[in-house]
Image 1 (tube, rainbow, N blue to C red):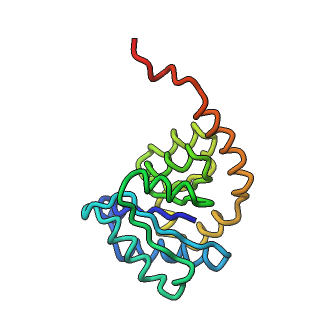
Image 2: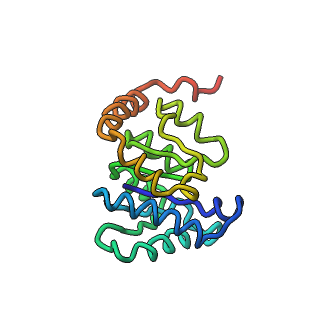
Length: 177
């Protein structure tokens, strides 16, 4: 499972990176206890807003699960998309990784924080795979149980057809007059 955090959740909506890291770690611990390996994938590798710092803090909280957790800080957008595309599931609090995974047919669960996830997930028929970002802070274990209990293999099959249709379609809407 790829997990993409978002430091903006702490810096723009209150709280702190350590609090957010503990919440994501609790989510990951529950997923690990149910057989999932975790790849913490950075979306924004710049020093600010601090996504790398957040992921490193999550990793520190998960030190007891060293064999089940890896940290991925991609050097390019292409390597980020490749890492995300290899995952069985992506749980993301960042929109661009959601676009990358959904467009590749990877089941994705989004942590909505500014309203832009809703339209993108609806486009893929995946709007049921959204939760307000506050759920990971307020109820991380319950959220993890909800996420891992879903039939992601079925969702992958469904999304794969949608992703293939997008790849093979004629993008007339991109043409200019």
